[in-house]
Image 1 (cartoon, rainbow, N blue to C red):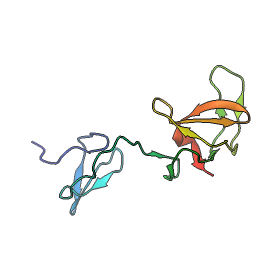
Image 2: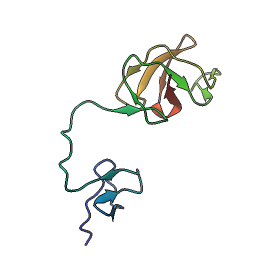
Image 3: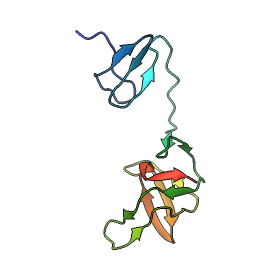
Length: 112
């Protein structure tokens, strides 16, 4: 039926051609099907809300107020973290903000 391959990032079948490129409308990934994909590595790439790549030791700033689950504490927008540590799992970032250890998703921070 559909000879267009699925998206290599999100595995969506909703891909479509645009000139020599293929585009996934679900995750906005664009790729050339004639190029060899880069060698897969075990290293995970974590990006902040602006698309900047985060690495261990970076400092980040919150882009919105976040209520800590199980607590009445609210982390305010603009709060800056101590150096972060990237982890696997549900949350990508372990850090300290206002002397509180927190686990954050990368979509709620920007690189400082």
